[in-house]
Image (cartoon, rainbow, N blue to C red):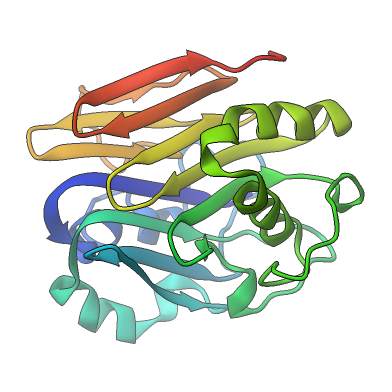
Length: 229
């Protein structure tokens, strides 16, 4: 269910992260290499990036491979912090632009790769859509990103079948969780990529163990085992 990618580092183009890599999100929308659940990610896409402290977003309910507008503009969009995703909608969930990650509270961008029973999530007037990922994002925003690990562990305790890989960024921090799906990390000379799966065959990609929290800042990368694992 879904693939996502985050970047923190020197300003780079959105195209260089999403469209140009040989196995980037564009390719993962129709031929993911490590996706455990589902074969396609054709139910929408989203790109979020920071313009100074302000998160900007471009989202769609159409397949990424069919969007000529993004292909035209993405080379000109540059940022030091990016969150992007392609979506495979859970059964019964709406297919609409507002249901595609990244979600935002005006400060953070959040993406969810996975599945969670909406019955364990509290109702929210601030959720951008009625799908599980939007409700989960609203809960994460309400509890605060500093509590991301405990929030994910608590949701998993209420829904043992949940898959809760989260990616979040605020322009200077990039956070991610692994809980039931794949996540990889690439330390480049100009920054760090965190992604559901490698976008190329660079041998420097590192696989993140399940049930861990990843934090990327200007000081480096820190991994922490999540309680409840």
